[in-house]
Length: 204
Image (cartoon, rainbow, N blue to C red; front, side, top):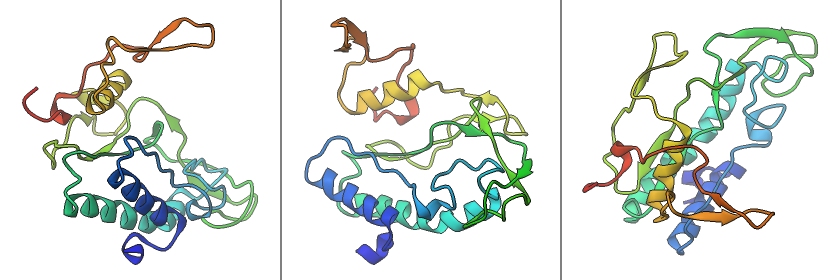
């Protein structure tokens, strides 16, 4: 089983996540970071940090192996109805490649001063992968324009994403709040949002 996930930090974290949810833990977060990502230890593939193509070639096998094993394992163990697996990052990346001088050589990065390709921050479009949670799988929800720059169809916002997760966890995000440092109630949803209908088990 450990070999199936990959005997590296990312693979073993994903395996531990499966064991935790199987034991009844409601929410688990796993991050792929550190040496498996390249010289700077993360996915921040600005040209000054990484050669973006070399970085993806380096980390993708670790990522793909563990995520596919986790999806298969959740289904094999009958956990896919209860467990919603969400794979994503914190924002998108520029559709256009930029070039800059590397700030240091190492894994997935040329020597200092060598010009290499990278991608910068892009908040206008990104993608997530969902599996399990009783949803209908194999769907593609939404699209971008042909350049991958902006949403073209079925735009989903941050509030919708959060509302979907809260609903899966059984939290009434429209009515629930948390108490802030000043003692005041803070709404769970800071911006409007509704659960993504394609990711909510029927009937909805």
